[in-house]
Length: 68
Image 1 (cartoon, rainbow, N blue to C red):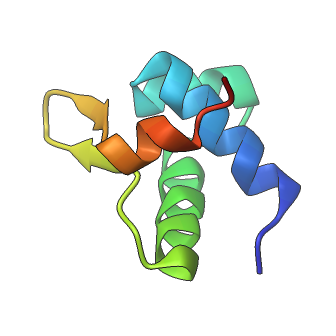
Image 2: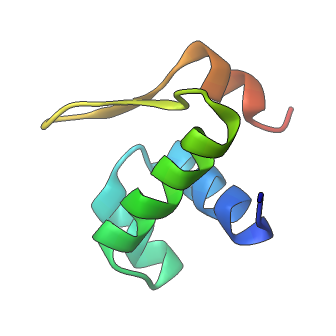
């Protein structure tokens, strides 16, 4: 089930493209943010972010989800 909280987390992470900074802005822990994003992706069966040990980027679908 989609929650408003997950959308907010997605938007902040899309702006920051960094889990640690996004978590700080949201006043949550980085693991909690990571879990929420994974749950959002799982609920829709899509990948919104590409993650590596050095960077986080939006996928094409993730970019399409951003408000215009």
